[in-house]
Image (cartoon, rainbow, N blue to C red; front, top):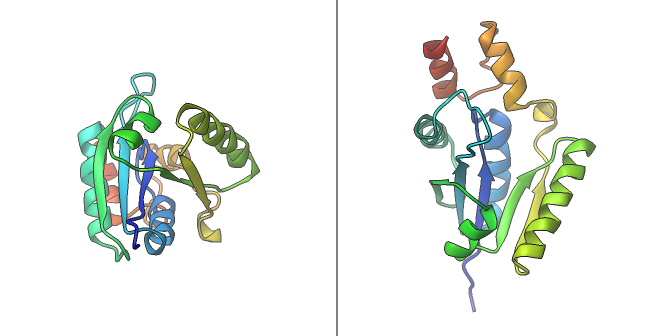
Length: 163
């Protein structure tokens, strides 16, 4: 029996970086479909609105080749509930460093405790993205630094409009 293997790649994506796209590209041959879930977290202050982040992701994935369909959807609340509502049992998470692993392991175990059939797949980005984070990119962008090595072109353009 050929089972559809759908996965969920959740995050704030404020903004989406080349590192995020690299993880998505690495995950795409492993699944039949990936839903990128763009989070709305009332306790987080974001540079880009939820609608802007979704639009930037759609524009960014349109410029790349993936080995499975990519769908981009908003979510709020618990990711495990979103996964359950969409009949997805695999979460994709990127790991850059040991500090990421500590946090992500706790999150994966907490998610599994809430929904027992949720599994988390950890993927490492290309070495050139190990240091990359949305927070660092926002700092560079606010000071008008060069962002072209860190962000997809649509996001670079959006930064220039914001600042």
